[in-house]
Image (tube, rainbow, N blue to C red; front, side):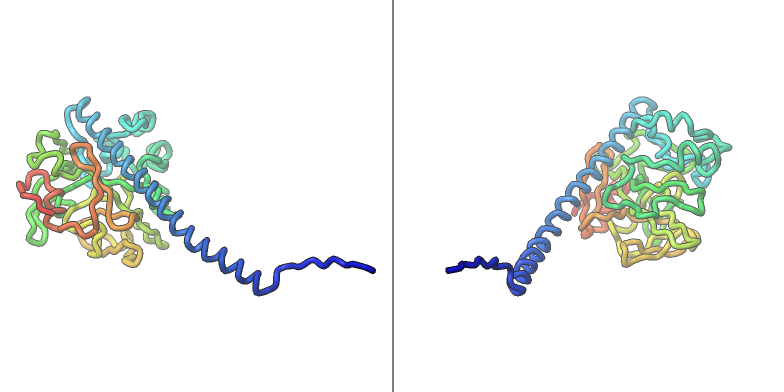
Length: 304
């Protein structure tokens, strides 16, 4: 008598069932992994803002004041970002930056472009917004873009009344004007110091200058519109902003430069307060409260 052994394999139906089960498990796992990764990115971003706040306080202690938002008309001789370099472990970059506050070299001229403004500072980049090829401005000497901007008040760049809203002061003023923390009459815990911005998306001849923080107009945010507002940001030239509302970057041309706080985090933005703390502000934050947090001398009673 002869016995034969047969090897039983998967049937096609069984194989398809296994594949379907694996697909379901992957479908359940991927969102969970993405959620964990984003939570880590948000925490890292919050820590970056914490370090900016600490750098500002250390500068204030050593030099007696906060930096200006920018120096010289147009912010061409540097911004707060240059001023805090020694306080974020970038002292060598600070020493290589020529003409800070005084000119005639600026952020866009050599040797600053070679030694400083074409380099990336990791602690000033949010991992949730990699830039994806947009984190330099090719039409501006490939100068780098970053993700953090300081509070220039509740209206527009010129820091005056806009659309019926009076300027209520800001911790960071233009053209080299500096202030002390004691000048913040609304209280440091009630006043925004810095927030996130989304790096603008380049498009051919349009180098979107949101995140262009080596330059005065790109180094700040304004509290006129709320976090991640659907209302457009304003830049003075069409070649400076690329309108991409579907990607969270609405923009329009207006001589009154105005940039909202924006982030790639779900539901809101991280922002540092002038007392050094960091908070997460939801997209639905009351506009009245957000504008009040954006002023330094508005005297508002904040109610969220």
